[in-house]
Length: 210
Image (tube, rainbow, N blue to C red; front, side):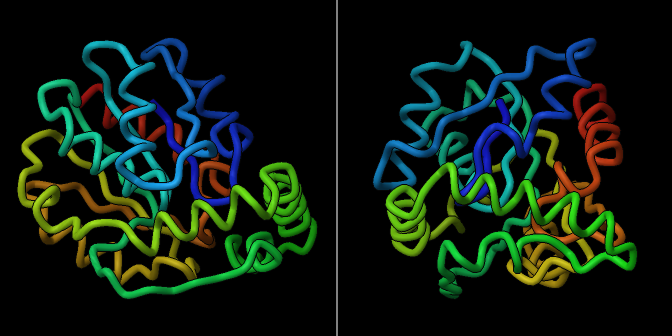
C-alpha cells in the first residue's frame, strides 16, 4: 500500500507501482477524502487486503503509523519517507508545494522535470483538499505511542535536501524505532519516489524481501 504526501496524487508513486509488480501487488491509498488522519487510515484499511506492507511519504507516513495503531496485526512492514517524529507544526500553502517539496538539483533540466509534475499534482489535488489535509496533519495525534509499538521491519528514508522533513528529523524518528534501517537519498528533496525513482524502488524491493 503506497500512500502520498500532502497535495500529491498517484503520480508520486507511478514508477514504483510499475516497477514493483514482480515482487508485490502495489496499490495506491486515497488520502484526499477525509478530514482526520484516523479517518484516512480507516478508509485505507477498508480497501486493503487482510495483510499488507505500507509505505508513505510525509502525510502518508503518519497515516501509515495510524494504520499500524488501528490494525497492528494487518501491517507486515512499514516504510516512512520524509516523516518526522516531532509534533512541531510547519504549515505551508498549496502554492509552496511544488517549490519547496523538491530539491534544487544541480542539473536545471532535472529540476524542471521534477518540479513541474509536483506543481501539477498540487494543482490536480486542489486547494480545498490540500487545506483539509494540512488541517488533518496539524491536528494529528501524538505518534509516540504508535512509534513505540512498531514491531515490524521498518525503513526510514529522507532526502538530504528535504526542507520539510530534514535529515535530522528523520534520523530522530529512526532512532526511536528498534532495528529501523535508515537511508539518506542524495540530491533529493521531499518527494523522493518521484525525484529518485530508481533508488526508491530498489530500497522498497530490498525492504519487501528483507
